[in-house]
Image (cartoon, rainbow, N blue to C red):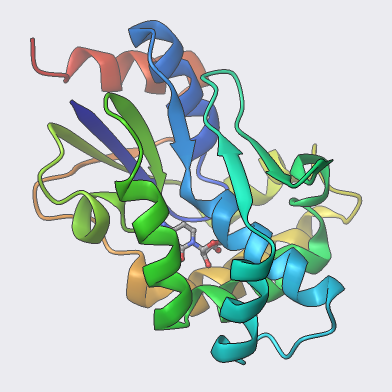
Length: 206
Ligand code: C5P
């Protein structure tokens, strides 16, 4: 059984996916972390972020390991843990360019499809492209202001700057970020985290 939770940036996907996974006693998988890792490694290596050939060669030479724990995913490259470095504003600003490359998307998709079921998969195109046969699909939304206010608790920038960056990332992510026709769309704006988790759990098949 696979449950997909897609949605726009900072809509609460990973917190909801983590809560649902914990309630079900299964892992969750953050696909965004794989795109973020590709971006961070590309930036550190001084690569052009739209140079798919160079990026893929670098990713193959530095294989990563995603640890899909229910309480928070971790990413390693060799002995080095990258997790804490993947949510910087520098990575935020570059990740949509990297995620627009079909070669990088194929690299991420192959890693996700190799994971053993069951799990909750969280991202933009989990229900549409990567796991179209998932047993249950959800898509989370919230207004840019609500999302910026939430993110402001995790970033040094102020709310208007975060809101502008999120709106730009929404624009760049439009192609891969449409809800699946059979996804249940949830506006998380007026709901608490526990309410969103409860709404997802209540819709899961027996
Ligand atoms: O979910 P998160 O904000 O960590 O995702 C970071 C970026 O990775 C997104 O802005 C998007 O560009 C890309 N992404 C994607 N497809 C996914 C997950 C993330 O294109 N399934």
